Image (cartoon, rainbow, N blue to C red):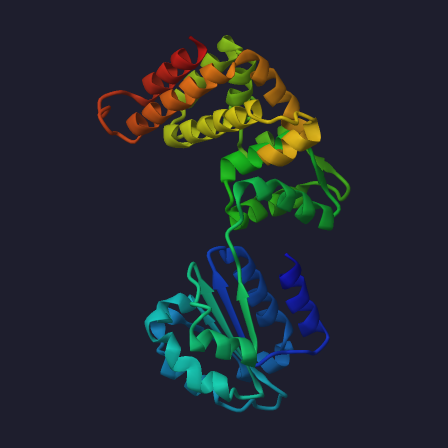
Length: 334
């Protein structure tokens, strides 16, 4: 994210603000910026007397302000970090008076996760004027693949499109979890390596042959034998392959296919752009387009809505997930 890089570069250049209010639904960048400030503003010698980490559930805003107003000892500045600061959301507006006149020798950091301040309110405007207000927005699933490629490129690694799809479908848009798994791979792989589906399977535990990506591909190709084999695998490993998630991803595939049928411009680059998929996978949609006419796709979308309701236990408490999976495939293929 460009804004994260900008904040880090400003700190490196000595342009350090008295307040950093880091907020938003995506905790990954909040943690990254908090960690950077925690480890880079003060020297190790200065940290003993001049760096304090507080936790929102254990302190009040008054406690935070009191610590922020202290003067540093044998250093140019002190750092006060408030982690889990969202616990102070009910009283956060009490910060206004301090933010209007912050202690210039204090760097006050709020890690305000999963919530945001109302940008129309006075407190947000004052904080933005006094320092940095950074919002870490949740990344959409269709953006995560590109994010993975950028992160790996920065570490001098590559990744195959299928391996990227496996990570996204298994880990969703949880950037923290994905980053942890990529770090594990970086430990065992030499720089310049390309991450393959086999490496994902061997080191992260995601099967390269039995996953939702392969199920969708088998459905698109009308490869019934392969689809039923994957369904059996899912039924025997329900914790790793919850039916609700599987149905949701298959539903997404057919929704995209319905959109593809409606496109006038079926040029691969336009298809990739409109469906928000990696161009590498457009050929899979081409095959499915030929196998499933628009009328059939519409019927399948309706069927998947019914299966989704049943998978959540509505009117189907006694039906095993494996049976629901097979029912889904029967109705798709017939």
